[in-house]
Image (cartoon, rainbow, N blue to C red):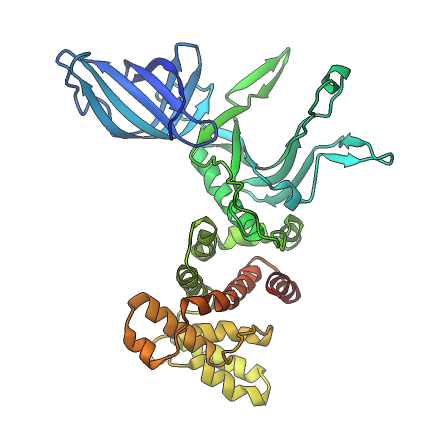
Length: 452
């Protein structure tokens, strides 16, 4: 992608001044800084500038100031005719209008992440329809706290256009109103951008689970108590535009699933899902990533989906149930005691499966399929007791491509996986909802709503 040229200027590094040229896109995420040095021979010193720079500020000839972070040198070019050496850097993020001294770090007290196509899911608007069907702006800001802890606070807010307030604003053939949902993250003390990005990544993951699709970031705005605007005797934190790799344009060719609102923001807040996820994040994150990754893959195959979901289920069982065979046997004994007498042998036989020296995938799947008898997962034409074995052998086949497995055991074809992947999805989502604080009744209702 061709990045727009923003201008030339000067940059100081290690008490030395260089000429530079800036290129970046408002909505594509790409940022490039070219640093030029005039040499005597036309050959520049490769070590004149480091390969990586944590933070760098510069000023264009127009007066525009900016700060870049996490710069990595992509290439170095020498022009013998002009005797100019050019060092090209890619940066992850740009802070607009901010110029820091070399020894200072850019920090923020609050950052807003403006999201695309999220308002309907958030179930709130900055407008409402009056008794006479007139459109009215709400008097109070639309804001909901979705997580509050000692370390930081997260809010969901809706912002947008003001209604016309003077007559000449009505003299247009097209009057357009826009509103966007955003995530506001506040720290008690100033933090670097990467700390905010880490928190936002957690929130974004939960949104994507509920929306069953990617979440796109339109804009990022930062606020710092070190960068202020003054209005008479009053001062406020100046809004700082932040550009970078997390900002992406939405592809309107891909439609959101019909059941995109199977979990609403209100559901998450009511069940304290953000609290649960942040508390369990380190253990739960790899499972969520395997699940969400499928929203980002273009042209994914049934086999790829299958392998992701089976790995997620196996990881879930090892992290949240047990990874110790002795403890697993005790768990089975406990389940047998709670189960009706007629089911006792069935439970013991199927849940132990072929686990002798370690807990096998088949046993893990059988345990998750049984779900302590709280829900029945329909496995279609495959018998319940056979399903874990077929899934385990199918996984082994598609990983190793050993035809002996296919000759000896039942293995799902790619077309069959399209059908049975839905069972695995239903199982995984049931347990994700459990870890996010949803009770038995809510979990059953939600997976039934999604899968029928």
